[in-house]
Image 1 (spheres, rainbow, N blue to C red):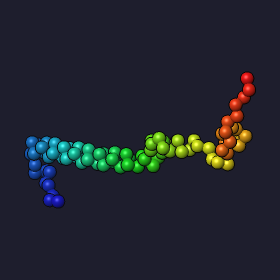
Image 2: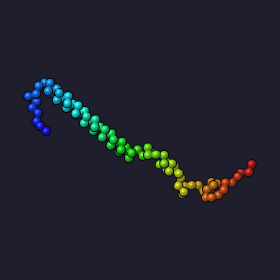
Image 3: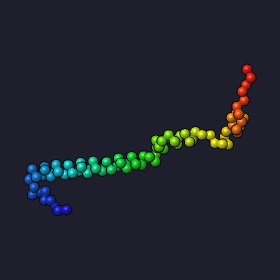
Image 4: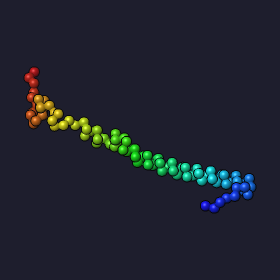
Length: 85
């Protein structure tokens, strides 16, 4: 980058340089912020498993075969027994 002799510049030139530098800085900050927000959105999927979808909670709510009660009607292939009134 070329050296700029700030002492040799007029007030108007210095003000224009300041404005250009501020505009360029704002542009770069906005671009970097967008990059970081995109990266945070991508990484958030690892920190919040509940937002993956409804398939995960439904699969977790099914009882395991060893946890099922075998004395209830309908379990282990037994037909339900009707009670006499």
